[in-house]
Image (cartoon, rainbow over all chains, first blue to last red; front, side, top):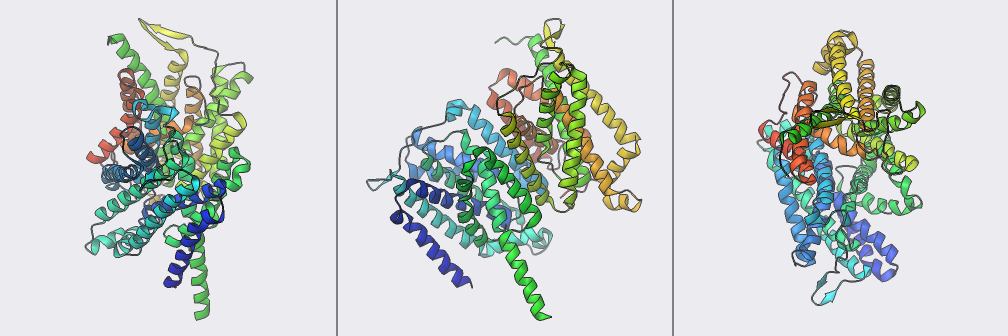
Length: 316
Length: 295
């Protein structure tokens, strides 16, 4: 079962890699590129929410900080794109630890509220700290990254960067989630007192999951703004958080492959809904509310339950 | 800029008004959390709807302040009732994340529907008082601000009486303190939860209507105010009503003072920095309530 999944994942990765060879349409490549990066960000949210059981709205803030960090590295501090992405990850990991340490000491109610407040704060700072972020104008004309004398100028070229980035990140997250650490995180979600009784301190695990999730989300944001070519406070639009959440919830929080599949599938959704930009967010909201009532554990959870019911029936 | 006593006093008075309005929002949040263990992410949208109700009611009643205020309160309380019956009543107390995602979805739906129908252009709300104000020495405060502060203070007095001295309020406090014991003595959680949501929504309608003439009314105003209200309930202690009020007035003052001397970015960051600081020192909020079962 697990080997089949890996083979399928490999095939899917190769199919995605082949996309620029099949089409030269910048539109389709753009959608594919967003699908890859959104999937990474959703998988990072899945690490903290699905596996560890901590609903974090800070992801939006990390996504935005990552975007600004990589853009500022290039435009203000004279670095290159690659260092920009590294800084995006590092800064977010540090921010996550600073915000996470006091917050995780409280309860999960407070965690949700603090992370949401954090995300909104980042939005306000992006808008109002004009000396650094250039305010609502944003930082435009981000240059195309280059490596070994090659400039990744076209969407097709940049697509490779996004592809390599997401394959590496997803592989890392998969390794993490299926390791002993991943199982410990699930145990913390299911029964924290039991984890303590086993002699495991939950705090370092929770903090590490939060920091890793933040670093990956930040790096994803850092790559994404170079695809957009501009970073402005719109990178902190709640629409992004909404997208990540819907991907995780529809896919099934706590199911690694469920979220990856729904990430790829649902990233096409904004394009389908493009007929009405005004109603797009309304439809997202309706999907969120309906999903919570109809299938709260997502497609993966629904499949698991159906399998369980079948097994029970077969046993009777 | 010279720092004069007048300027400081002006900032202080503005801060108190602001703080009292924050407190109205935070109290509603605390009320719903205490009774249902639901954090209502759509609370800011209740407030925004209250402001819009005020903006639309005022021209109809010929710019008269009080009738428009009453209309907003009733409208939002009814909206709260509908939301409770449609969505919140289907949530169980132990489904914490689910309740958040449902109310978040609701908040997004409401915000964008309002934006779609009434556009995102900021509205200036005019009342019978216009920009007239009361002058105390060298300080000038507009009537709308004075009334907002007075209305908020009156609402707290009313809330105190309701929670302390009516069966309606005592049932709410009973459920918040000990759910099982309240069930045993025959209090119906569903009725009480409905009352709490309607009351909280009414307070939000009041706050929104009082804010409308002071600030610009936009579909996003709820989002920015709720962000502060969330910080307040954390600082004051989740589910702790007096704590939230104390934190709200304190924060309104601090924010107003900081806004008077530093850039706007600092004003907004202050809330968050204070919240993180409080969490470091007292993880359960400044005014922890002993008997509250949380998390």
